[in-house]
Image: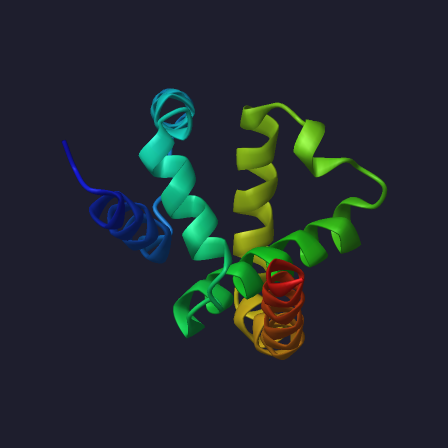
Length: 132
């Protein structure tokens, strides 16, 4: 059985490559994570990681995701991206990457600053409530 750190590292490495996953791969990953999420050790490690400030790499990934969602909202209008079927999400992702793929890192850089401030504030509040 792989450790929590190994799993997270593998998942993060997979995100860095920006490899497009097909529907069966997405479903397999969802089943695996659903099973893992029930284990006590996973829950405990997740709680501990929430108390720490996210690293620069994690913030970059969050910013890239937020930038992509920003562009999706801009071009798709009032469409609820989360409720769309997986195939349609994949099609939209490919369109956005082909049309505005170079703009995502630029937007992400701006968003990253805001995310860093929010993250520090979130951890500060969490630690303060823990002390009280």
